[in-house]
Image 1 (cartoon, helix red, strand yellow):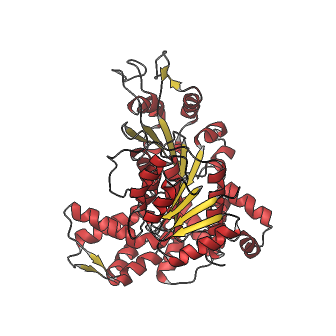
Image 2: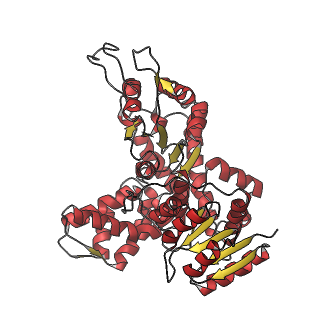
Length: 483
C-alpha cells in the first residue's frame, strides 16, 4: 500500500518541489499552506507521515506537535525550519518530532529519512520538561553546526558515551554541557576534569577518590569525580593525556560499571554518563602505544567532530552578536561592528577558534571608547594576535608563502616549543595526518560534497577517498544546490 505524506509549508515553491520529489519517490502527497488544514487531516486519521515547516501563518508547528503526538503518537513528524539554531533542533526533539532538517535541505536526505521513518517509526521520546531555558548555549547557523545540532538532539534522551574531537577553542566543553543541560540527566551534576591540567600521579585519585592514608599526604578520605558526578555527566577533557594506568582503571569502570577508590577495597557502583573530548589524533596515539585501543572504542560510541571556526566563517556575525550581548550583561560598553569589520573577521584564520573570537570581542569592548568598531580597529587587533602561525601570517599580510615554506616555518616553531627536549615519537605520521585532513576537507568543500569530483580533483581513486574520509573522520556536508 502506498504511504501518504502530508506536507505543510507556506512557501509555494517548497510545496511544489516536495510534491514533485515525493511523488517521484512513489508516495501519495497532500500539500497545504497552513496548520489548520494539516491538523484537520491528522485528526481525521489521514496520512502516514508529516513534513511540516515550523512557522506557518496560523500556528507554529511546535505548538501543534504536542496535539499531534497526543492524538496519533505513532505518526512520524519531520520538522523543517529556516531558523537554524541549536534551540530549534532541541525544541523539535523535545516536542516529539521524528527528525529535524534545516532549510535549505537536501531532497535525497529528506527522502531517505522518510523511508527510515516509515520503516521503523520511532516511539514518543521523553519530554525534556517545561523548565528548559530559552537561552541558546551554542551559536551558529552554518551547515557544519546544523549537523552538530541534529546529532545532539538525537542524543539528548540517551546515555550513549560521546567522544568529542576538535581543535582547542572550538567549544568541546560547551557541547558537553549543552548535552547535559538539555538531556535526561539535567537534574544531576555536571562534573568536568581536564586530564592535561592534573599531575599524572594524581589523576587516579582525582577520578576515583582516595581513602585516608592511601598515599603520603592523604590525611582524609576524598571523593573523586565519579562520585561527585553520580546521577549526572562526567566530562573527561583532553582524554588523550590520560596515563596508561588510569586508562586501564577507566576501562574497567566502563566495562563493569563500578570502581574502587585509591587505597579502597570495596567496589562502588557508578551511574554516570561519560563524555570525553580531545584535540589529539587518538588513532595515532594508539599506534604509538600511548592510548589503549579497547578504551578508545569504549569511549568512541558516538563520535562528534567540532569544525574549526575557519570552516564555518559564516557564523562569525552570530558569534560577535552573542559575545557583545554577553559583554553588555557584564557591564561592558555596547559596541556595533561595521560590516567591513565583520568581513575582515570572516577572512581571518582564527587559530584559537571561538575562544579567540570571545577574547577579541571582550578586549574591543573594554579598551576602545568608540561605539562603532571599524575595519581598521579589527585589523590592528588581529595583527597583534598573529604570532606563531606561518599560514596565518601569510594570509594576514597577503604575501605568497608556499606550502613547503609554511610547513618548514611551522616545524621550526614546533621544535622550538619543546626547548632542549624533542617532540613525542611518531611525528612523521602526525604531520601527514594533519595535512591530509584539511586537504580532503577543502576538496570536498570546493566540490560541495561530491566525492567523485573530489577524488578526481585530488587524483585519488574514489574508494581510496572514501576510506580516507572514514579513517580521518572528515564530515561531508552535501549541498542542496546543483554542483
